[in-house]
Length: 359
Image 1: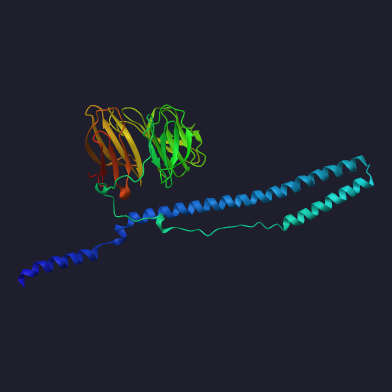
Image 2: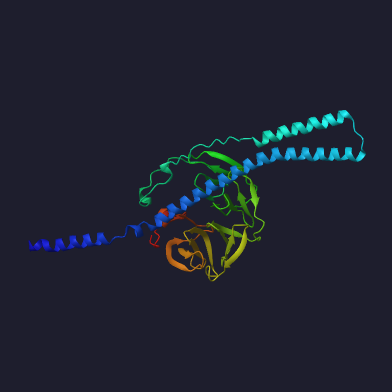
């Protein structure tokens, strides 16, 4: 029996440990993401509500304005008749009939009832999935692919519904089944980065010195005129701001407000952003933080950093076993649970990095 005492103590310790677990703290970050999703949905509903209210006002304003214009026309005509002090019985009868018709039309307008057909909002439970992490070692083989001609740019980004890619010579919007939904000709030689901006409801595409907004509904390109002409390399957005990094050693990262217009707020220069012989290849925002890929020219090395988005202070740094032999940009993207994915094109592999900076 004495041999079981240590086991009993261990079980009791585990029981005490379980009792001390705080589920609220453990799920806090996930709950915040659910709340953010809820707030975004509410914003979309409010936006649609305001849009339809405006449609109601527009319909009625057109009816009222037509009557108002007719009343003004009649007032002017009667004033002319009075001033000239000459009129015929036929003109008086005509004016009387017109006024009577206007009264009838006004009665109809006042009794107007617009029919609103509103379908019940159906929310699919599959819109939100709760996962326990992503293990890249268990990835299945590709289920769908899309071919891209030689010369297509490697930039790619997505929103909740579509993927934006370049298939020379077009900029293409692709759905989840890898079908091209819409496309527009890309008339520029270069394309360095792209990202989705939920605040503006637009994709942002960096050409080189020019930055464009791409409307997913119309696929129209609008150049951002309020950003100075510099050589740009990377971009990312938060809820309120746009961050873009310059192309060249000693990268400068600049922060722009999105609303009411895109306006420069602050910038981080070398050596705060990186050393003078280093370049920030990739810049991605997540939850008040940045994920950065930084290349060192003399060492030909690559590292990933996590920094605070408001101060640019470093949280952690991870040196990667990658030698930057080619002048090709490395990229990273966000995974679930605040983890990161780095594409190593030199060794043909994907690197999964935890939120604590561990490979």
